[in-house]
Length: 108
Image (cartoon, rainbow, N blue to C red; front, side):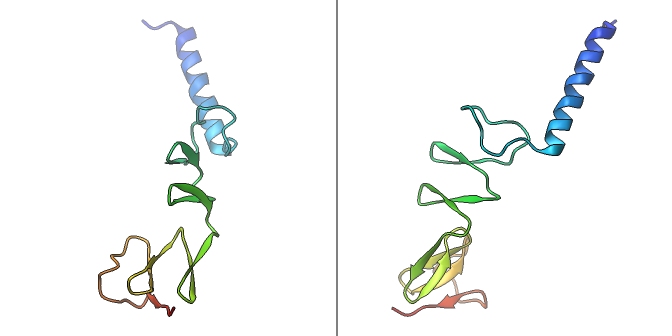
């Protein structure tokens, strides 16, 4: 039989963990170890919060970061510049695929 004190200790640990996760812990870790319950991703050797940043060209950048593609401006976290055709496509779309309604043709 498991001692009653052990069961209470486990239940207390679970309750504290759920309480911390439900209210959210600080986004920026204060030590090399990430806090549980936070949606962090890795970019090279750095961690970042995908709700505020993205990984672009091996650097952590804000979601609002833009860059030029010919005469267009594109959001690097959501779009990509297909430099051969000067077309802005959504991230994940193949630059060689046929043009869609989401694509923007830019001029040099």
